[in-house]
Length: 347
Image (tube, rainbow, N blue to C red; front, side, top):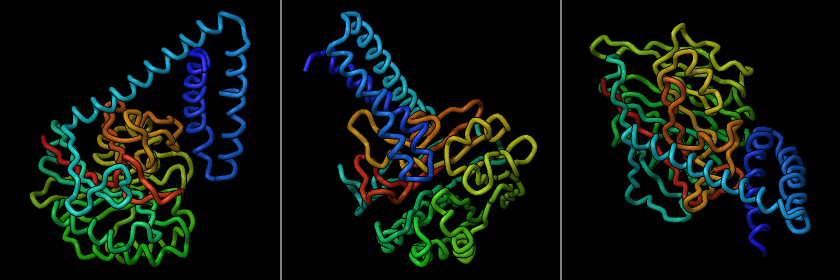
């Protein structure tokens, strides 16, 4: 294989991944995703490669420029992710007894974020954020019991849940069993939740299951949380675009919220512009199956892999995207362990 063909393949694959994530993976219809993905192969790979083999000599220069652009963009993306971890004083700690290597489906880590410069009303606040449960038997309900034991050890002031609790209506009983440990956890300031796109399969049953576990639903509304010393902050949840249309700022108070829950990070720009200070999202599973050095390949986001995982600056807001707990599609995680995200705020 000539170097020109190899560069063309790399550029074509990069273009296909970006286009597939932006225009195919966000479609709720799995068959439509595959059809569109197959059609994208034509302009991204099937036409450029023969052109690189039998085309004019200037194709070599074009492929070199395109390859250079791909490398620069990838280095920039990975650098921004690394900077986000640094600025939030982030660290990940594997949980003893649930450690995993390459195949990390049943591993667990606690990813801690430290946010200095937070509003005084949030000073000393500790929040545990869990998302993308996908309770369907893999991991088992007993595995989720261990997750809640880890949360108990963290001792958060507040627990936030980011959606995608089941994939099928018949899995709701598994969700109720998996939430058994949550109902026994002390949480001084409460447990708040939103729904995700997979929860459209049985939204009423899922809401009732969560409420029986002591969860307050934030569905396009906000809630004032009062701390023991009288300080107050606002937590908000949006259902957009899955449960309630495309407006993520519906139900957001004037001036924004201190904490905004959004299942997908795609809502972050509008929430940040409306004044939300810290935005918590999931949905992308951190890629679920990742490659060495490159990280996530598939990310169902209109921004492709821009906000797949970690802490990101969006305007004046911090966007924290968790890798979540469960899996979807295939019950497998590679180089992307499930996690509990812990946010600690300091004035």
